[in-house]
Length: 266
Image (cartoon, rainbow, N blue to C red):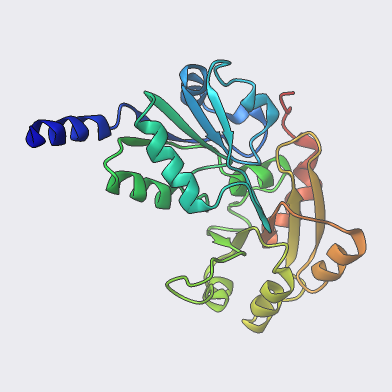
């Protein structure tokens, strides 16, 4: 009898569904993938982040359960462990569970961490890539990250590291010496430290810098300057996060190409 009860309990704990880690892109709903849209339209549950655009949220199946797990600096709707546990629980109740993340799940989106934990819990999971802000925001500002006359290399790096990482800090010296274009995610709050590290590593204070806020959205803003003056420019203008930081000579193309900004879907 106990064996039957144990077997029944085991069956009841088996996941009924699958979790899809879907990248929502940087903001412009026109950049959302067809596969992502199809999953939203048939999802049973959608757990979404703070920076997902309202137009993409409007694509969600009207009968689906919608859960805001959005994170902003200093304010979390759900902590990371709670979010993952929630996905595990929902996969045991529903067939299609969508974890909707801004940008791309695997580019500074904790998608790899969530996927590891889901696999460890025996939950079927699949990633649907999205357009990452580090590529899209510069493009909408008229800044190509590579260009034969300006840059043949690009590095993506986080400016806001987690405490207790496998190493205490980004090796800014190596980045300054090893890449012609540097793209920094979440770099506004630590910009003073980042600039000091890059200049100490030998990067010229005259190196062009662009900050792109709310990239690909209708209210996208840009602040153009140089490495030596950009911190003062941020303070004087009140420029705030969320923004992507682009450092390198490709920024010199901004005044030439910025007029070719793509149409943003409303």
